[in-house]
Each structure stands twice: as structure tokens, then as C-alpha cells.
Image 1 (cartoon, helix red, strand yellow):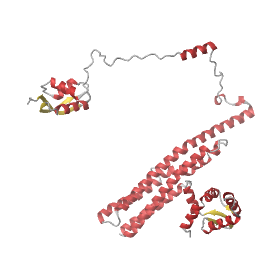
Image 2: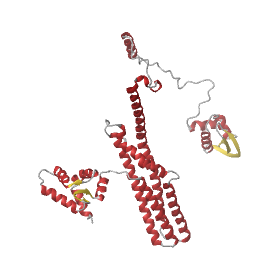
Image 3: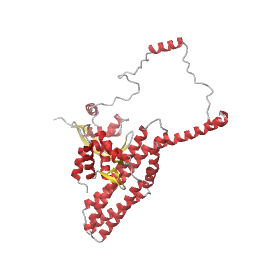
Image 4: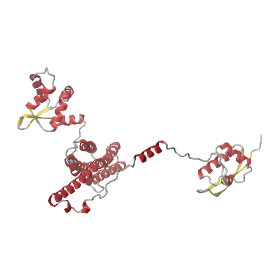
Length: 414
């Protein structure tokens, strides 16, 4: 059994040696000779063969290195240590879509166990099954997050790979990922797919259990049910986002590879026909010919000089704008900009038999909200004395409003 403290101490102490070994073990196992050569190249020059042997013995004793079955002279990293190193190096390996489907089947079985435990009123078993359900949902969330990061890695490797190799080889991983992961994922996460149906069944069990607990009495804490239900909805959203991310990343690369393949096949077919029968054998409609070469004539030297001179002497024509103070015939009076101007105008028009009618006469093109603002402002002014009128309908430029207006008179002095 792995001793956590000793293993973690060894990983921290020998990280500079184990990190490059992790990359080597990604490609397969290593023989004892290869391990010794690798460590000898990385250790300080004063290190001896005894130091290398002691280091390898320590790793084997801690189960960091594991002998390969039926090949005692070949070693591989412990699977858990390998995954841990990959996590620390932020490496993500794309899993299988079938894993998510297997998780869903297990979630449905756990939902059935939860329903059975509630029917027999077994609170301990019910709490245990709910905890298991919550753990499995978290496993799915971790897998979806890992898959999303792995998809980003697939796209980055395709974009940054060697440009000299054929596009089909550069995008081979993209095409394989699309066929083996994205296409099955699209079918799984579809509206009528297994993912949505499984989530719906588990969700119905939890909601029914929550309602029955309120009616028959609690067996487990409602917070556990609500937390599990929220995590299931988070899993559903995460699956949709992972699929969307996969499409955004890989679909353009896949389409580029497909277009390139179509062009390559067409070019190869045309070249084979040309080699066998000559260029006249190729259909003219399939091979456009430019009968007129593109002209690149600039002109004579004098024309060029005149053109450059005109550019150097270019001046933009001035734009004449009307003056801000200018008035046109037939323009409406300027709308008041301040409350003081409107109050003074209202005071000069006193007495007002109907404030709203007066406002509509003053501002026939005013917006409804602006008219209602002035109605409220003037009716509350301390200089005026108001009397409420009967409710009636007024037509503004934009709306028909029903309001109880006021009659305004001046307030007596003193």
C-alpha cells in the first residue's frame, strides 16, 4: 500500500527528475537500462552509479515505479502517480463518450435504490444512496471538465503542428476525435438522447422524494436533496457547454480538412487525366482559363508626377454648418431647458382651468413621459394653489392617457 506522506515527500524532492520521466512514460514502458541512462543524464555530474541505483530502489519501494508483468526488467509509472503527474502538469486525456453513458446508467440505478429506500422508510440507506449519487454526479462533472480541456489541447496541437506535413496528417487527431467523441456526444446530449432522458428520470425521483417528505415526514435533510438536485442540473448544463465548445473548436478544422481533401482529390484526378491524354482532355468548364492578363500599367511618368502632386496639394473642402442661434420661419418656440423657465411661463398664464390641457398646448410635440414630469412638477409647486378636476382622457403625440388634472391659481401673498 502506498504511504502518502513518503510518496508526496519523494515527489516533491525528485520532481525535476520525475517530470521528464512522466513524458517518457506517456509513450510506453522503459527498461532498466533506459531509466539509468535517463537519470544519469539529469543528475549532477558528481553522481555515481550507486546514487542512481539507490534512487531507483527508493522509487520501486514506494510503488512510484512498478515492474511490468512478465517483464521484470521493464518499468512503468504507477497509474495513480501517472494521473497525479498529468494533473500537476495540466495535461488532459480525452476519455470515451461511453463512459458518460455508463455513469448515466449508474445514476439511474442509484435513483431506483433511493426510491426503494424511501418506500421502506430506511433513512440510513436513503442518506447513503444520496451521497453515492452526489459523488457520481461529481465524477461526471470532473470528466466533462477534463474532456473540455483535452479538446482544447487537440485543437491547439492541430494548429501548431508542423506545416510541412500534409493537412490530412496534421488534422488526423481532430478527425478521429470528431468521429469517436463529438459525434457520439451529439447523439447522447440530444433532446431525445440518453443523457437528457437519464437526467430527467433522476430529477423526477428527487423532486418526488422532496414532495413526499413534506407530506409524510423527513427521513433525510432537505438540503441534501436540494444540493444533489442542483448538482444534477449543473451536470446537464456542463454537458451542453462541453459539446458546444467541442463544436466551436473542432468543426472549423474538420471542415478545412474536408475541403482540402476534396481539392486534393480533384487536383490529383485532373493531373492524372492530363498526364494520360494531355491538357485538352480536361473539360473547360472544370478548368477556368484567363484569356486576358491582369493589367498593372500605372501610366506615364508625367501622369504619375501629376497624380502625386495632386495628393500632396490636397485640401478638404470646408463644411458649412448652420449657426446655433439661427431661427427658421415656422419653428415652434424653444422648449424650456430648466424648471424655472417652465414655472415662470405657467405663472404668467394663471389662472389655468386645466393644467394638462395647458401643457399639451405648450408642448404639442412633447414626449408623454416629459409631459407627465412637468404635470407632476407644476402641480406640486408651492407658488400655485390647486383644485383637482374630474378624471378625463388626454391625447399626447404618442399615447392616450387618463388622468385627474388640476386647475391652478396663484397663491395669495401673506
